[in-house]
Image (cartoon, rainbow, N blue to C red; front, side, top):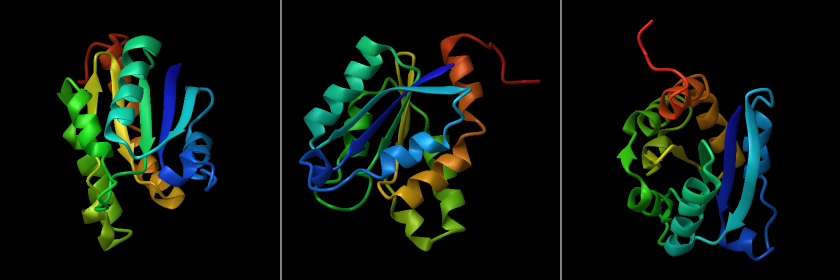
Length: 162
């Protein structure tokens, strides 16, 4: 079972001024026999709060996967990639590159995503777009590879070669 957290970055959502539809859309995409969402939170687009949540989930809760959504665009308030880069131990550029590459077949705006992915201790962190449609599409592109990557990260599997 892949123990998962979903964090939505949204100033309006964190103030109760907007319903978070992206977090639930992400959760609905996950196969319940493989993923267990153990933590879900909507927080403001504040770099220190994002870093605090990421560290808490990785260091204290020790979950296997964090799927963030929101804060990956060009707005002044979009700081999710910066927060993620500040807390990770290892960058995993292939995940974000694959999402952008596949998304370009859907929309040219995909090249504007600044999403990143990385590892902190034994947790994989993946930044997804803030819109439900964008988050679900991007997650769909990477889901087939995530279980194997997490198996390797956790030491449950030792080889990528078959």
